[in-house]
Length: 331
Image (cartoon, rainbow, N blue to C red):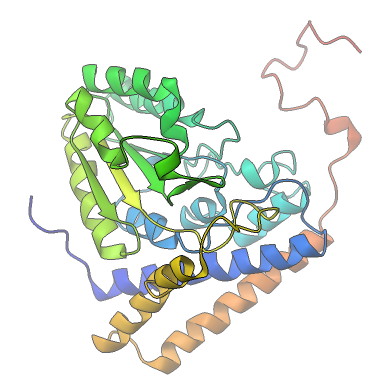
């Protein structure tokens, strides 16, 4: 396969997309501290290149499913900052009507089949979505994300076997940030090269530098093309890093300051900005204008969430069953 082409427009898309995610997540951290956002909250800060490099490849007809660190995925697919922030607030104007919260962003319109709170629970579902596309005769591909902790689930092996047997159009992506909550990769497995797990099923598998938009873009382009051709799944271990704790309640004392600073030196947003300036794709003033626009977008999302209504108590049992008069509910 020829090397995936990366244009000026792609670099600018990456920068704006990643910067929006970063500023949005930083605001979420602030609002969580103010108890505006409650419950579990997992930030995507540091991992932005993973989704940026994906969405410069896939089409609006393709679909995505992921785990609970899902705010970045929601913003990258096209969902508005307002709908995501309102969901974090638990407001009725949120993308899941305020019923899902941080871990359950969802959009039928943008083919984002959700964040999932059950570790590894989305892996078989990703294969199921891919099976539906194959059954319907489309060329659409599902991108199925998981964390490095999720690959310890038995359902992953069942899914890999079926996906290869039926040559399903799915790209399995493990966002390996090296810690399953607070437990390092080395303490959970003898096989620290996670991508090698796919080789047992004869699945094309490789590791990718997740701090590089270019590397993710190229690997994703190859995997997606393979799936569209009917040649089956690919397993990508995208090695990335989260700059914050596992969730907002995690002080992340299991990592050294030196390790965190080493990865911050590879910050994909900083690297992309420097590349844009070096290639003269935009000026400092033009990038600063993008930054200012994003600040306004994030500010507007907070105002929208603050001014939105709470779900009415009558909504408690709606959207649970498709059948409105489900006969087994006992009031």
